Amino acid sequence: MAKQNLLKLTKPSTLLVVVMLCMATTSKAQETGEDQWGAWYMYFGTNAISDKLSIHTEAQFRLYNVGSNFNQLLLRTGLNYHLSEEAMVTGGYAFIATDPTYLEFPGEEDSKEHRIFQQFILKNTVGKMKFEHRYRLEQRFISTQTEDFTAHRARYRLLLTYPITDHWFVSVYDEVFINLQEPIFDQNRLFGAVGYAFTKDLNIQLGYLKNHFSGRNFDRLQLAVFFNTDFRKKE
Image (cartoon, rainbow, N blue to C red; front, side):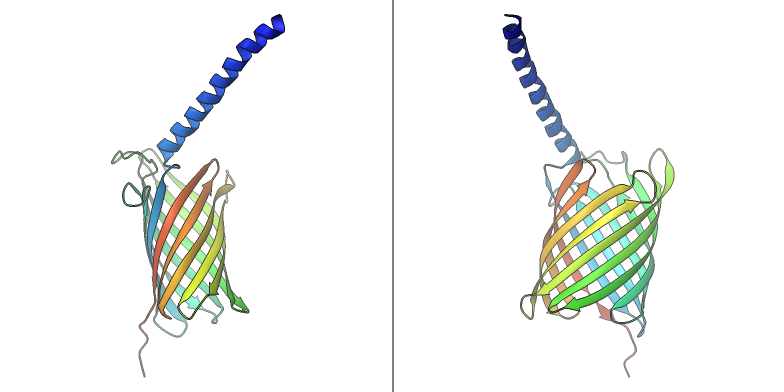
């Protein structure tokens, strides 16, 4: 009899716990925007100024929703030194303005970051498949409403690109972010896209990004324009 009474009490209690956990998970997703499709709109450029040197230009506008709800603005530039057609080193600077909260409260919890970075890119081709390995170190100087602090991070990205026709191509990459202080894991980005090359210096890509943090996952559409220019003097 005591066992039956215990079962009668346990079943509703268990159901209540499950319901509360589901509600908490849903509430968290609503607060962070995990249950929403966001979007990143991006521009990248490599601007040649000599046979060995080029300037990297980049702008990214990130939204919690596809067409609204600001998340982040990223502006990045750098000086590239081309060791060869397959290898390049870069040193540069980035400015990042971030609203870390999904719910829009202007001026609350916003952060500003000044970032210095160094990177090495190595390329190779196997058959038609193009491989790009990018190794990057970042020194991050971050300011919020309550504190200023410095953080250091290492990143590695493997990018694969495969041509379908003379103009159409597909690309996929995975990039892991490792903090050089606690916590060690920062995030992982898994990405796939379809691209169209108008010329060798101009292409557009539309893709999907799964951005994974510890305990959080975000789905992002990406629209990117790549436009390279040549400022070298013509002989």
